Image (cartoon, rainbow, N blue to C red; front, side, top):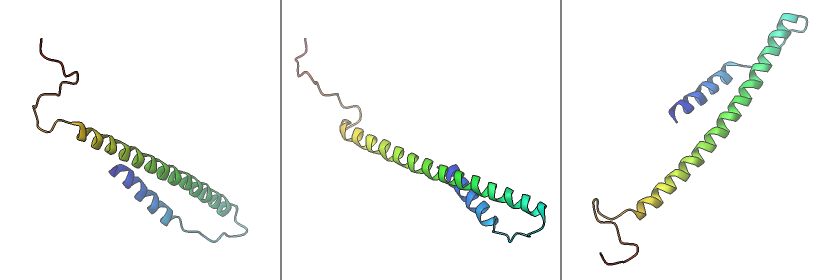
Length: 93
């Protein structure tokens, strides 16, 4: 979970660093740079959405697994090394 949070923090820093710039009207090099910036910003938006969806999915999976573990904990014998209950309730042969 920690690497995922680090990735989210990195994305936030990249988005903060990409401040909108005013375009110079006659400079084609500026236009190309601006197009690249827009493309990078678009990719970052897609990556951010993917990370958010993945995080939500992983959180749901963890909650589900914790629920299963809690349910299993209720079904464990009360004391360690205690005998298992005889489900068939049969006498020993």
